[in-house]
Structures are given as structure tokens and as C-alpha cells.
Length: 545
Image (tube, rainbow, N blue to C red):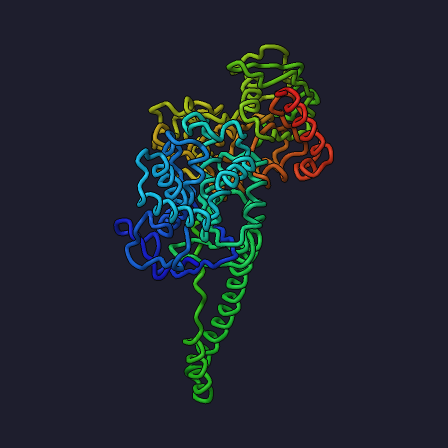
């Protein structure tokens, strides 16, 4: 059990949290939600002891071990991958290293023997003999192949490091598990594995995530941060949303009835207060009026952008034809004879773990890279807008947001441009901020403004939900659902893919393509999917032999 008692955190004059009292108990997975800037990550740091609160305290049941998903991807660069995972249980790793040092001594003394015996007993009690196999199992589940287990962390790419740090947090069955955005940089297979792990996990979990499907799948309770307070709701994310909306609706209806009663009493008092025969009744109603109090309904701190892609022209039947595209990067064939024809009603989700292949294909289709082989052709009625995965070059500028967007606007009018910025929550003075200093989420909203202002009828989006808060993800999700044009996109948000796409494509690790006209859930559940994985694994094993 972990409990916050009267926790307050002040940043200058502003109170980020005020007298927060909340208890997180064993057997529950809590989804910690709130608008950007509400303090979700900050609250996790207070719970973990990384940040000290201004007032109050955090109490953990004595003897319980707390584990945290770390965010520093370079901290363990000089350590082997397996060692990094086992460090998740600091005491166990300490015992292993002390044992190794003792057994490496040339002049092994009686005292060393006694100490080694003590360590061996504690090591066995902590299930130390299974540590490496347990760590390897976690790594394999998250998609880190055995060949990487003895590599140094610095030899892994960013996505692999994230998975190792997640395995480190999960290692050794911690009593309390704090996870800040654990699905970031995970492919959908790894997310599915993590969902199953947390569903079976019997201790306390507190997780921050912008993935609505993930929260729905794993959470038993939702802790909602709004206006410096945290309120618990039983159930998953969808249940929280319905409950919170129902509560607001009930309060508004109750206030409406109270307002009608107030009006009725005021009218009676006004009519009969001077009437001697009615004066007692008027006095009685005055007392009743004084007792009526309206419920305070504070507007939520959450803000939803308005995302509406409106194409300037209707798309024709010929949209996109891809024939035999192949591409090799750094000696690896990431695309191998990719061919497909896109229909005028298609919204295609590219899924699976081969991120380089997806990004490479998008860059080729947008003319940013040449294929080694093959061709592609956009229809004459199409116009494209592109959301790149890496937008660094886009924002390497001293321009203000308004001037930056003006450069892409077909209408050179500042009021017109500010209208699009306003929809994306850039209000007032925000328009004069320089694009080079924007946060990740602000850059994404700028790119979406650029796509909206373009009037394109074909959208190509490479991981657009990265850096967005849940409200913005919901708005983008809804915007793409109602978009009358076509779309090609990659995204790790399960609900986003399931509700938007009517066609699923997966580029396998060998560079070939699976193409199915289906929903994402149906694709995952299909027998063909299972057969594909079995065949591909067998082929790889044959190749290795």
C-alpha cells in the first residue's frame, strides 16, 4: 500500500497540488489521468521520493519494494542488458556483485567464506538462481531478442533501451509499480504483452498513459487530477469518462431545479412580503431561500483542440498505385517488392514493429526519398499533406508560430491563420512564440494546423499521437474518423487504429507486406495472423540454421 497524506506542492505562488489525500492498495491498477500540466508525472515523482512535497507525506507499507520506470535512456549505457534489468531489484543485484567480488579473491579467507555463505542464503531466498532467466523472459516478451541480452546498453537503439528500462521496472515482482507513459516507443505487440502482464500482476500499479485502450484494458480504478485535487473512480477509463460526465450532468440538472425553486420563492416574496395576511408565509419562504445553495461546477482544466480536415476538392477513383517498391538502408532490406492500390475510401493503418520500414515507405511516397526499385503514382485529383515522424527540420527557424503557418497558408491573411491556430489551442500571445522553442506537443499541434490549412484530400501521418495529451489524441482521432478523404498512417494507439482504419497493412521484418481489408481487432484475432507469425518465425530459424 502507498498513501499520500495531505500532500501539497507549491511552485512559486502556484499550488500544483493542495492537501491531496489518496490511498493506493494492493491488487489494483490505477490510471493517473489529467490535462497536460496537471502534474501527473510530478505526482509520481512525489510518490517515488524523487521529488519532495511542500507539505504532507507519502507512506509506504514497511518492507514493500517500490519500482519506477526510469526515463534516462543513457544512464546504463556501460552496463550489459541483463544486468540492467536485474538492477530493478537493487538488493539482489548488490548481492550478486558482492558474491562475484568475494569468489574472485585469490586469498579467500574464513571470513570471506562466512560472508559468502550468508549471501548465498539471502540470494536463494530472493530466488536469485532464477534472476537471469526471469530477466530474459521479460526481455523476450517485450521483443528484445536473446542475441541482445549480453550487449551493452549503449549498443541498443532508443526503442530497445525503452523496453529494457521497462523490463527493469517490472523485474522481481515489486510490491508497488510506478509507470510513467510505459507504452511510449513500444510497438503494438509489446504493448499487448505489457497489457497481459499488468492484468496478471497482483500488486499495486499506478500508471500514467495517453493510450485510452491501454487504460481501459489494465485499469481497475482511475485517479483523476483536476484543479490540484485527485479524485478516485472505480472502473477503467471509459467508466471514468461516463461517470464524470454523468456527475456533471446531474449537478447541472440539480442546479436547474434549484434555480427554478429560487425564482419561484423570489416571486412569492416579492408579491406578498407587504401583504399582512401573507407576511408569515413570505418570511418562511425567505428562510427557505437562504438555505438553497447551488452546487459549484468548476469547468475542467482539460482543453480539447478542434481538428477538422476539410479537403478543397473531392478525391477521384485513382488515388495511389504502388508497384514493386524496394529499399535497402545500411545493408538491410527494409522494403521488399511492396505493391498495393489505394481506393478512394481507404484509411490504411500501417502496424507492426518494423518502424523504419513504415517511415521509409512514407518518405518515398512523399518524395523525400528515392526507392531502389519500383514506382508509385498519385492520382491527378489527389493532394497530399504529410506529418513526418521527425519534424526537427520543420522547426529549425526563428519564425513565430503565426508567421510559420502563414508560409503554408493559401490565404495570406493573419486573421485567417490565427483562426487555425486558435482551433489548436494557440490563443493570444501564443502566436508570437518562436517555433524553435516549442514543446513536443506544441510542435505536433502546429503540424496538424498546417495539414488542416492545406486543404489536402490525402493525409499521410507517421506516429502523429506521439507527444499529444489524451484530449488532443481524442480530437485527432475524431477528426480522422469524419475526414472525407483518404489516409495512410502509423500509430501505436490501439483505439485510434481500431476506430479509424478500414484497412490494415503490416510490413514484416523481412520487408514484405501483409494487406488486409479489415479492422485492427479483427486483424489481430485472425487465424491468418497467427499462421503468418508461425511461418515467419520458422523461416527465420531456417535461415539461421
